[in-house]
Length: 221
Image (cartoon, rainbow, N blue to C red; front, side, top):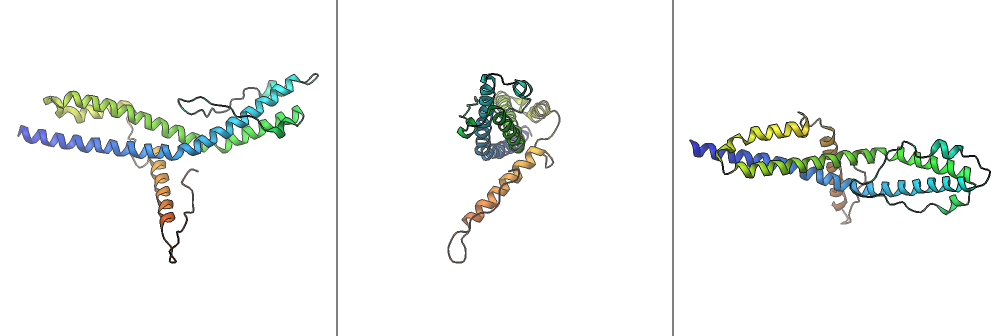
């Protein structure tokens, strides 16, 4: 009976860990899918922000110019899009903007910056959500793996499912990150499914032997 229980517990552990690895893989692929789009967004916003700040510096340097624009729009409460764990590297401003009078250049640069931040808000928001979910998955799996290594040679291994449930409850605050209704899980599944379908259409040969290109972006783009 004891041998049978140990076998059943081992099988259960394999199934639990396999499920966790599947979710981690899915969210890792989702993060990798979002990364190029996010990097492009970050670079665009960095260039626009640098152009706006450069226009403020030129406005302050002009004699007799009011400082209203610099006072009212300096350091606005705009959302930062730095890559988690990376520094934002500004890009040079546009030469055409340097040829404009400082007040007009400042207003135009600020308007473009705000418009771009609004336009890319969805991309930035989903990247940060998926990044946070992926990091939490990694932390959870590390703790679960360490716990399993301690218990696997002990009769207390039979309590691992309960310990795992407690750890998950702490990490996810009692919610189920794998539920169909979970926003991040739903987003990643739909995005990866759409990309897989587009890739399949790209590889699908037509009746004359040519390749049919894919047509359609992934959800959330």
